[in-house]
Image (tube, rainbow over the protein chains, first blue to last red):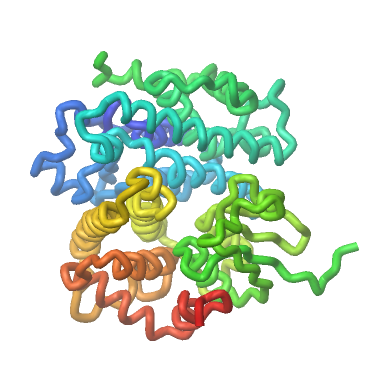
Length: 220
Length: 222
């Protein structure tokens, strides 16, 4: 029986979202590394897999291809709805989860994507770093305000919505990790987010899927 | 005691693509709502009054009849789909087809739209409007090129393509059309994307797309 294949990169936040969903749905898959450091996403071979030349890409056992991390996560949720459900049942709570997902995947992540930022400020790594830092910080601040509005308390916050793991948590952690580890964002300025982050990073699925535990991990 | 005559409220702007996606979903779900324009050119999204509605100061913002607030266009669209699943379903039933719809939604909502957002471009190029236009044009073109390839790989025919996925309107169509409008605004040559062009032209013949188009909104300049 062919296993599904995940094309990804250890440090890609969007790949990490999918690694998390695969872990929570207990899917056995093959991992193929596409090194963004070596620009392997631009190879003719990978372009056949994904014309957008981006990771992650997920190949189903029958050979069909899926791209876009949240489409893959949504697919896994549809396929395995009872294994660690990643969405609540109530429509309004589901909407709160999706609101957080989109705050990050539309309003923060694309704006600080290294390839894009390098295009904005070519040959200026300091400006690139400052831009990414500023925009991640701005986005996390807006998210922190939203979480406050839902009545969350920074002292006990464990999950983004409904005191249970959801897709929102799968998206929050990679963004915070990148912010903190790569762009020196100070998570303590966002105490609810920090509390959730610390709790989630204690869970086994988060620990095994973290970038520095991936087979293609390398120092840059 | 709930006021059963209370309508939901949509805060938006005639030309905002994200607002248009929600107008479309509301039209397809046949929801009666109040529309409250927030003029982005006059920076009305930064007013104290609107900040109380939505702390992230962005539109669209959707207020449910019970007063709860939802933001992020696709979260609102999904909420409407979850609340009215039988009225013009905007997602197929099959998990793989649903994923294809979401793939297109995300290609646009994450990989194209945020990159050509006017506020962002003003920040990247504060003193150079021409550079902003070229940035938008180039990024929309790159995104549409990838999307066109994906639609071709899925077997869509440029001579007769009517919808992004399957044979009905889905959320992918609700997101494609506003982005196409933006592409035209930034001088993208749409003839390079014949499948997208065919889908757009078909969708714009549908009453819901016509009624919700920017130029037909109450806050559009007359």
